[in-house]
Image 1 (tube, rainbow, N blue to C red):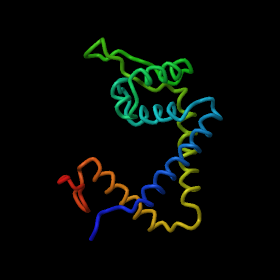
Image 2: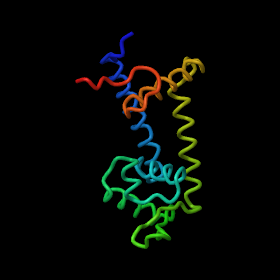
Image 3: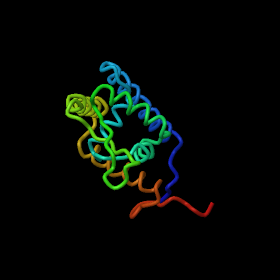
Image 4: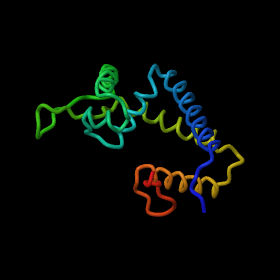
Length: 155
């Protein structure tokens, strides 16, 4: 068994992700927002109370970029900064009720994206297999694979 991915597979995966980002960018713009702002709202919905630094690490951008994005979200009444009860120098980010309709729109956009990507020609069992395989690939990249092919570290 070989674990060497085909270059075409990598190109296809990259192109698919790129097309999905374009679609989400377009959708976010219809709400006068950016995809990056949507990502922040989703991350805060899943993990309330993150710091700007933690959020920056999660979405792989510089802290100053997160600060500017949060400033815009705060100005729209979607997010607030609260002092950390243990360390008053630290700001914790929390969603406000006004973010709920946008989170619903993001969830709707995600469902529609899945429907668009899967279409009518991808069987549910193939999708389940793909999700499992992508999970293994992600684990391989972060070095936490329990099954499948682990990255070659001999190089």
